[in-house]
Length: 210
Image (cartoon, rainbow, N blue to C red; front, side, top):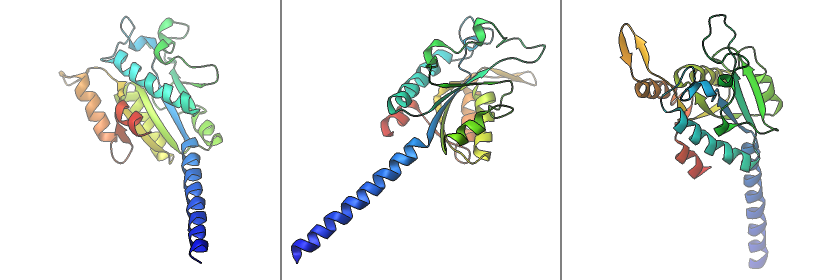
């Protein structure tokens, strides 16, 4: 009798463990990486260099390599200027190209946008729905503009968002004659996203637990 009970316990444990692992795998497959506007104009000698763009892009590459190793979807967002007075990301220039540090692989989706919000007038939402994606990991440039706009839109569309803070970068801003340094801009916008809109963590934190 004891042997029968023990056998039943083992069977129940195995079934429960298998079900849990299956749920974890399903959740894992429902995750995608979105890399926003890591393009040459944001780097040294570009038309709109950011503070810390190189370091942020190298962290983004680490996240990208993790997603590739896990066989999970990757979406690259590429901004192309559409306004007549635009000064960077001009079509058919080197500056509009995605930087080599996160260069898309042949099988990775590239979505072109013309507005800060990556969902606006693009196929991004339909593409994510077609892949049954529920969880997004987001990084890129600029923190205060396209990253912020895209994360907020993603949350409004019902996605669970994680932002890799040190894989994002921005620039100094000016308001009423006062200069706001890039680090302050960066931290302020990440702080505003943290909590309701996204889980904001570092590259190291993400790679350590995922």
